[in-house]
Length: 403
Image 1 (cartoon, rainbow, N blue to C red):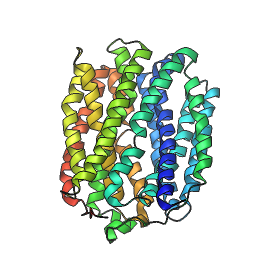
Image 2: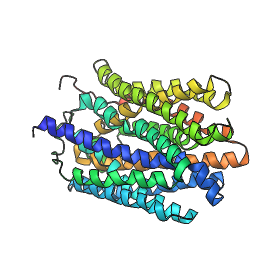
Image 3: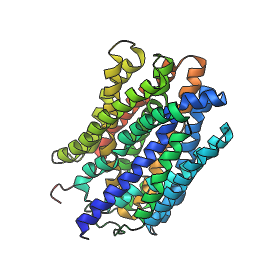
Image 4: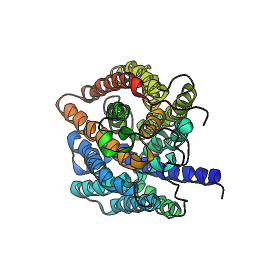
């Protein structure tokens, strides 16, 4: 198998696993009203399920990822896929809130081992100047996998109970985990062309890497907003706009597929193309996307008329426009020597400041007022993200576009 074919196979396979990752996460959001009804839960308790998942997720990542800078990454990724798939099957025997919480914790640990390592693995297969498009394809899993989670969860949950979609989404994970073991392990740094430095190539230097930290903090605020939107929008449409559960998930899931697919691919393509004009292309695309998302999110939350639906669509579009360029900027901000560790620190930070607590915070505010007020916190996060990313443009490394 040629190096190009091997890289393509790895990209397709890891993208498939990433789809399952996001399907599993978002199935819960689709069936939240059913879970809430069966266990008699408050909004804060429901939000805490996702917060607990991300707390374990973000703690596990820095513990596992340093191993990936020294040992076989494909084996660690496969082990993570086995763990989260097995934990997803445990949903069949989940019959109270504590058991459901335990299931989420185990899934978080398994998924962290995959998500913290896979972008570094792909970065060793593709050079810096096309990583926007590569990450755009890989992170198609974010909108499409999330949407499938809503659609599968809404359809099966409404007909066969909320446990059914979890069990069905678990089975493909075992198959793809075995396939990952057959991948060729790329040499670390094989596709890098940027010069190494203390800031880019050492854990201590990472603390002074301004390109890395502005991307990370901007991503954290974006993650806060996306986490809140994904967890609460179906419930918002059911409770505040009085849509039936299946219709709410179908509408939001359909919007997520279309807006997210176009935005994720377009963001990666724009970032790569604008690199010919400015080394800060990835940060620029992301910052503009966040700024444009602000008015759309405002209309989506507060307007009840026909404008609400296009506003939800555009809000998701501009938020997800950032996915590929931000991840490309992240992997380019550090060298291959510490890339998995840097990604793990990024995961810890963005979830600590982002969606590890945003669902619980929104639920807490909702319990004391209403869900519209709870979702207002997203607007503040989007504005902060745009400001940080505009500032971070000055620190972007210069990338040769003729690689």
